[in-house]
Every structure is written in C-alpha cells, then in structure tokens.
Image (cartoon, rainbow, N blue to C red; front, side, top):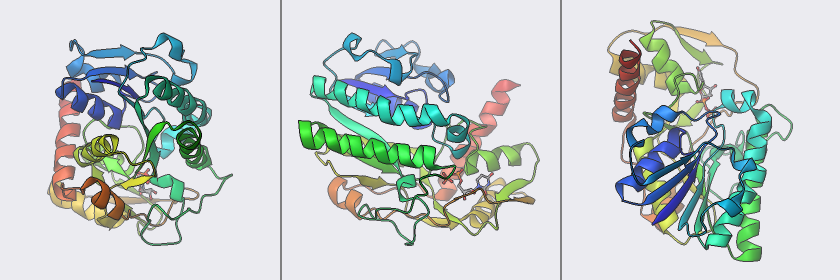
Length: 315
Ligand code: UDP
C-alpha cells in the first residue's frame, strides 16, 4: 500500500504516518515545516518505508509525484487559532489551492482521498450538539474566518471533485484533539495549560472559562480517520469525543492529575471564540463502528508525561 500524507510532520499527520508505517505501507510525507516539526518523525527517519519531501503543497508539482498512491490524506494546514492567525494567507492557500492539487493527484491515482476538515465549519453554533447536517454559524469576515472559511471551501471543492469527476473522497470533521506531538507553543488550550503548569505559571483562562470543548485523545482520532479512509463514505463525518467540559472543568482535571493546586489568570475571550462545542458522533458510530475510548483523565496523564519528557530532553 502506498500512502501520501500532507502535513505529515504535524501533530495529527505524524501519528497517521506512524500508523501506516506500522502497517508496512510505503508512506510519502509532504510538509513545509511551517507549523510541523521534524522531531515528530525523528523516530522513523531511518525507516526504508518513509519518504519525506520538505515542500509546500501549494507549489508542489503533482506530475513529479508517483501515480500509484492508494490513499491521499490532506492534513497540511496551520490548525491552532494562534498559528492560523500568524499564517493567514498560507492557511487559506493550503486549504484551497492545496486541496485542489491533492484532489487532482488522488483522481490521477484513483486513490481514496481524505480531507481533514474541522468542527470550525460550525463556527459559534446555536445548537448544543452539532450533527453533520448543521450548516454552522461562521463569521465570514472575523479573525477566525481565514481558517473556518478555508476549511468550508476545502469541503466544497472535495464534494465538487466527487460529484463531477467521481473522485473517491472522504471528509473528516475533526473536533478538538490533543496528545503527544503537539507543539508546546501552538497556543491551544491543553499545551498552554500543561506548559504553564510545568513552568509554575498561572493557567490562562480566556473569558469566564464557561465555554465548552470536547477533547479527543489522538489515538482515538487516528483510529477514526483510518476507519473513515477504509470506508466508502463521501459525506462529512464528525470525529471527536462527545464528552463536553467547560474550560474551568478542564483546569480542575489538570489540577487533579498534577496533584498540586494551580492558580488561574483570567484573560479576555478572543473574538468569535465558540461558546460550546460537542460533536454528535452518531454517524461515525453507525458507519464506522467507531467511538473514542480514552478518558480525559488517561489522555491528559499521557500528554503530561510527554511534555515532561520534552523538558527533560532539552536539559
Ligand atoms: N483557551 C483558554 N486558555 C488558553 C488557550 C485557550 O482559556 O490558554 C480557551 C479558548 O478561549 C477556547 C478553548 O480554550 O475557548 C479552546 O481553545 P483552543 O485554542 O485550544 O482551540 P479552539 O477550540 O478555540 O480552536
């Protein structure tokens, strides 16, 4: 089996690369290392089955790539609010032009194509639980629109290739995911909190901390992505953990795991920050037989161990 993963040096991408290498697939990885990190693939550097191209997907010439991939995963994109606002144009281009290129490649190879979309397509939702049929409430000109609208475009062009040219496509709507391999400075809530904890700083809670997120451990998510790639589903599928927590509840969980009291520093809520987010995963359950297994407690402990080991490595 021959697999291409764009964004293969990123957080989710590197776990997907690791999975397919463990299945003895030949894995090509394209990443320009804008937000991805070579250390995420360091373990596999000597693998005969991994080819790494340090390239921007948008300037890639697909004619020069093999035409016998079985699977094409398009994951390349800044993904944290801090990163996509730092690289707004790159975010829009990799999800528009980049998605089109990867769709053309998949079509040429007759490969199954999987687009990594996001719960951000739902924007700041009016409904407490979001099924795939919900069209979302996105501010098209707000600071998050460079990501939200780019991902919505990415979904639209993926469906276009499926409808008009019968491309074999899948769309994963990925909800908040965490675990080993996240960049310590990527700005998302779990790496922020864990780093603050490990460096003795107060945890920065934005707004009143009553906004909710549903947090999925990386191993669960990768299993969902792999199952979706194996299926023949073309419509979007939510992948995430339906257990919903407020940010203050997350602080309390971290406090319990760390077994030490933490202090909180309240900061202003970023513009358009969604107030609640919880996936309806009925479709994933029914179509893929998938649901997350790792509790927040177990996932957080593993993530804390990872960040601790990174600090020791640097010493
Ligand atoms: N958040 C927070 N403190 C931080 C980072 C994030 O309170 O240091 C909040 C943020 O306002 C949001 C939630 O945590 O409500 C999740 O933010 P994240 O950046 O992880 O991802 P998002 O779901 O917003 O894309």
